[in-house]
Image 1: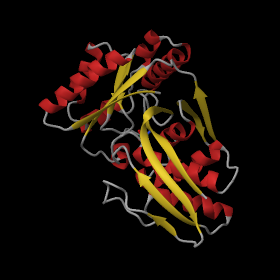
Image 2: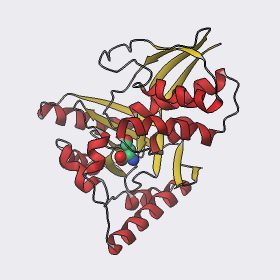
Image 3: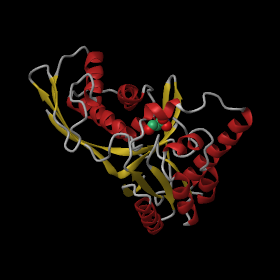
Length: 298
Ligand code: HSE
């Protein structure tokens, strides 16, 4: 009656796919340990290095997701939940999504319940709604299902796992400032004009075609976004210069990870990722902004 799980951190939007594209980073993520208790109390233990995160079940993402699942089943069940975070909340790397995904998966296993992967994503989305005000699925779907996901539809929820080039490398820079998803969602325009919609559809089509056929030129040509990046980049110190650095050094594309402030670049191989990571690290040091660099496959 005890389980330990790992939920990968994720990059949502992936350039042009606002709220519909997400990918899981292979080696970066969160560990969660869950145990069934004889009581009916949900206990969330203090989270190492994050003393400010709430621990009451109604406010903590793990508590919110676990309670929703138990309510759905009409069960009262005590739980002990220990969370070890790898990425900071407000990083743009799906930190809250990791907790939500890990909780949904762990509880489903412990209760021997046969919720489908799609149902688990729906429960995990409740955690996202609590954090950002909107139940976006791009982070939690990728964290639960792994790989590269397309949220084909929200009503009803439909998710596709698509193939991607196995050697594609991703480098991420996480400048240590916090951007709240709720805030960076509010600043986006609510409408888009048709010529921009057409450009955006072309970009997404090229990116997905490039990913599924390992055509790096198509990935490069599709990695442009007209919805989130032009507006959110103002919230991220040095975004334009950091992107230029990545592109000058051969990246296939560079954009904001989720709602930022992390940024990511697609690279053809690990050497290129290391080179761009070094350049970014020096660049942020020059700006006097601390940064953490991750390099990972999908
Ligand atoms: N798709 C969401 C957004 C992801 O961009 O607001 C948040 O990490």
